[in-house]
Image 1: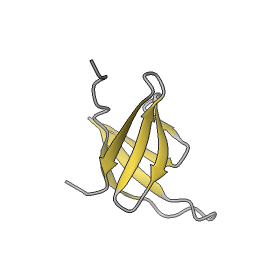
Image 2: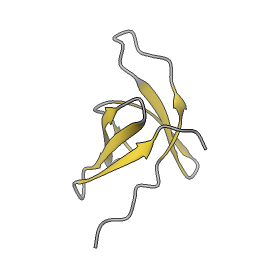
Image 3: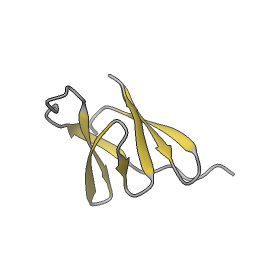
Image 4: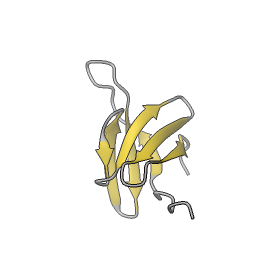
Length: 73
């Protein structure tokens, strides 16, 4: 069976870094994470790509990819 989803949700955009990299807020239960492409959140999910409509994450333990819509609510 496939691994369970990450349960990470999009919360909003953070101020851009000086190098122009996008940063987003993700949350899971009561934990909030600020991440850019390449960052690891919740000790197991790598932010692979931030596009205009979704963030692609990779579960580094199961090698499963997941897209999280970039919409609030």
